[in-house]
Image (cartoon, rainbow, N blue to C red; front, side):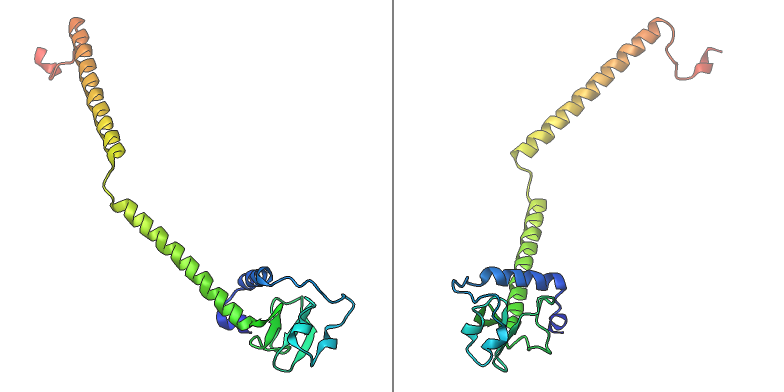
Length: 174
Protein backbone atom coordinates (compact mmCIF):
# COMPACT_ATOMS: atom_id res chain seq x y z
CA UNK A 1 0.00 0.00 0.00
CA UNK A 2 2.82 2.43 0.84
CA UNK A 3 4.53 2.25 -2.59
CA UNK A 4 1.24 3.18 -4.25
CA UNK A 5 0.88 6.16 -1.92
CA UNK A 6 4.41 7.31 -2.72
CA UNK A 7 3.75 6.89 -6.46
CA UNK A 8 6.38 4.19 -6.98
CA UNK A 9 5.99 1.56 -9.64
CA UNK A 10 7.08 -2.03 -8.98
CA UNK A 11 10.11 -1.46 -11.25
CA UNK A 12 11.29 1.43 -9.05
CA UNK A 13 10.70 -0.55 -5.89
CA UNK A 14 12.81 -3.40 -7.29
CA UNK A 15 15.52 -0.93 -8.24
CA UNK A 16 15.47 0.54 -4.75
CA UNK A 17 15.78 -2.94 -3.27
CA UNK A 18 18.78 -3.65 -5.48
CA UNK A 19 20.41 -0.38 -4.41
CA UNK A 20 19.75 -1.27 -0.78
CA UNK A 21 21.49 -4.60 -1.29
CA UNK A 22 24.52 -2.81 -2.71
CA UNK A 23 24.61 -0.33 0.17
CA UNK A 24 24.39 -2.91 2.91
CA UNK A 25 27.64 -3.92 4.57
CA UNK A 26 28.55 -7.56 4.25
CA UNK A 27 28.49 -9.40 7.57
CA UNK A 28 31.24 -11.91 8.03
CA UNK A 29 29.50 -14.04 10.63
CA UNK A 30 26.22 -15.14 9.12
CA UNK A 31 23.94 -17.51 10.94
CA UNK A 32 23.53 -21.04 9.62
CA UNK A 33 20.72 -21.30 7.08
CA UNK A 34 18.80 -23.87 9.15
CA UNK A 35 18.30 -21.38 12.00
CA UNK A 36 14.81 -19.84 12.08
CA UNK A 37 14.49 -16.06 12.21
CA UNK A 38 11.74 -16.25 14.81
CA UNK A 39 14.33 -17.57 17.29
CA UNK A 40 15.71 -14.01 17.48
CA UNK A 41 12.41 -12.38 18.48
CA UNK A 42 12.70 -10.16 21.59
CA UNK A 43 16.48 -9.98 21.14
CA UNK A 44 18.41 -7.16 19.49
CA UNK A 45 18.08 -5.94 15.91
CA UNK A 46 21.77 -6.63 15.25
CA UNK A 47 21.43 -10.28 16.26
CA UNK A 48 18.38 -10.73 14.04
CA UNK A 49 19.93 -9.09 10.99
CA UNK A 50 23.08 -11.20 11.06
CA UNK A 51 21.03 -13.61 8.99
CA UNK A 52 20.31 -11.84 5.68
CA UNK A 53 17.03 -13.68 5.23
CA UNK A 54 15.58 -12.11 8.40
CA UNK A 55 13.50 -8.96 8.80
CA UNK A 56 13.39 -7.02 12.06
CA UNK A 57 10.23 -5.19 13.08
CA UNK A 58 11.06 -2.40 15.56
CA UNK A 59 7.41 -1.96 16.48
CA UNK A 60 7.00 -5.29 18.25
CA UNK A 61 10.69 -6.35 18.50
CA UNK A 62 9.99 -9.34 16.26
CA UNK A 63 12.42 -11.10 13.98
CA UNK A 64 10.77 -12.87 11.05
CA UNK A 65 11.62 -14.37 7.68
CA UNK A 66 11.75 -11.78 4.92
CA UNK A 67 8.78 -12.21 2.53
CA UNK A 68 10.82 -12.95 -0.58
CA UNK A 69 7.77 -13.19 -2.84
CA UNK A 70 7.08 -9.51 -2.24
CA UNK A 71 9.54 -6.70 -2.77
CA UNK A 72 8.50 -4.80 0.33
CA UNK A 73 7.10 -6.36 3.49
CA UNK A 74 3.30 -5.97 3.63
CA UNK A 75 1.82 -3.60 6.21
CA UNK A 76 0.05 -6.54 7.87
CA UNK A 77 3.47 -8.02 8.67
CA UNK A 78 5.25 -4.82 9.72
CA UNK A 79 4.92 -1.11 8.91
CA UNK A 80 7.55 0.23 6.51
CA UNK A 81 8.65 2.81 9.08
CA UNK A 82 9.41 0.00 11.57
CA UNK A 83 10.85 -2.60 9.19
CA UNK A 84 14.62 -3.10 9.14
CA UNK A 85 16.61 -5.35 6.85
CA UNK A 86 20.36 -5.55 6.42
CA UNK A 87 21.19 -2.75 8.87
CA UNK A 88 19.26 -1.47 11.85
CA UNK A 89 19.57 2.23 11.14
CA UNK A 90 17.74 2.22 7.75
CA UNK A 91 13.99 1.74 7.53
CA UNK A 92 12.21 1.04 4.27
CA UNK A 93 10.09 4.19 4.33
CA UNK A 94 13.09 6.50 4.67
CA UNK A 95 14.96 4.52 2.00
CA UNK A 96 12.10 4.80 -0.48
CA UNK A 97 11.70 8.53 0.11
CA UNK A 98 15.44 9.17 -0.07
CA UNK A 99 15.95 7.14 -3.22
CA UNK A 100 12.91 8.80 -4.85
CA UNK A 101 14.24 12.26 -4.09
CA UNK A 102 17.73 11.37 -5.31
CA UNK A 103 16.37 9.72 -8.47
CA UNK A 104 14.12 12.70 -9.16
CA UNK A 105 17.01 15.10 -8.59
CA UNK A 106 19.24 13.18 -11.00
CA UNK A 107 16.51 13.10 -13.67
CA UNK A 108 15.80 16.79 -13.17
CA UNK A 109 19.51 17.60 -13.43
CA UNK A 110 19.88 15.59 -16.64
CA UNK A 111 16.80 17.29 -18.12
CA UNK A 112 18.07 20.76 -17.22
CA UNK A 113 21.52 20.00 -18.69
CA UNK A 114 20.00 18.69 -21.93
CA UNK A 115 17.71 21.72 -22.28
CA UNK A 116 20.59 24.10 -21.53
CA UNK A 117 22.89 22.43 -24.07
CA UNK A 118 20.20 22.39 -26.78
CA UNK A 119 19.32 26.05 -26.22
CA UNK A 120 22.97 27.05 -26.22
CA UNK A 121 23.65 25.16 -29.44
CA UNK A 122 20.65 26.71 -31.19
CA UNK A 123 21.43 30.30 -30.20
CA UNK A 124 25.19 30.25 -30.80
CA UNK A 125 26.70 32.08 -33.74
CA UNK A 126 28.26 30.03 -36.51
CA UNK A 127 31.90 29.30 -35.87
CA UNK A 128 34.75 29.55 -38.38
CA UNK A 129 34.25 26.07 -39.83
CA UNK A 130 30.53 26.76 -40.36
CA UNK A 131 31.32 30.08 -42.03
CA UNK A 132 33.94 28.45 -44.27
CA UNK A 133 31.52 25.68 -45.25
CA UNK A 134 28.83 28.24 -46.11
CA UNK A 135 31.32 30.31 -48.14
CA UNK A 136 32.50 27.22 -50.06
CA UNK A 137 28.90 26.21 -50.73
CA UNK A 138 28.13 29.67 -52.11
CA UNK A 139 31.25 29.56 -54.30
CA UNK A 140 30.23 26.16 -55.69
CA UNK A 141 26.74 27.48 -56.41
CA UNK A 142 28.14 30.50 -58.28
CA UNK A 143 30.53 28.29 -60.32
CA UNK A 144 27.66 25.95 -61.17
CA UNK A 145 25.54 28.88 -62.38
CA UNK A 146 28.45 30.13 -64.53
CA UNK A 147 28.92 26.67 -66.06
CA UNK A 148 25.19 26.43 -66.78
CA UNK A 149 25.18 29.81 -68.52
CA UNK A 150 28.29 28.87 -70.52
CA UNK A 151 26.78 25.52 -71.58
CA UNK A 152 23.52 27.21 -72.55
CA UNK A 153 25.33 29.77 -74.71
CA UNK A 154 27.37 27.01 -76.39
CA UNK A 155 24.24 24.99 -77.09
CA UNK A 156 22.48 28.06 -78.47
CA UNK A 157 25.44 28.74 -80.83
CA UNK A 158 25.31 25.17 -82.11
CA UNK A 159 21.55 25.37 -82.62
CA UNK A 160 21.95 28.66 -84.49
CA UNK A 161 24.70 27.20 -86.67
CA UNK A 162 22.51 24.31 -87.78
CA UNK A 163 19.27 26.23 -87.91
CA UNK A 164 17.71 24.56 -84.90
CA UNK A 165 17.57 27.69 -82.82
CA UNK A 166 14.13 28.32 -81.45
CA UNK A 167 13.02 31.80 -82.16
CA UNK A 168 10.97 33.90 -79.80
CA UNK A 169 7.92 33.80 -82.05
CA UNK A 170 7.93 30.91 -84.54
CA UNK A 171 5.12 32.56 -86.62
CA UNK A 172 7.22 35.61 -87.53
CA UNK A 173 8.55 33.88 -90.64
CA UNK A 174 5.11 33.72 -92.14
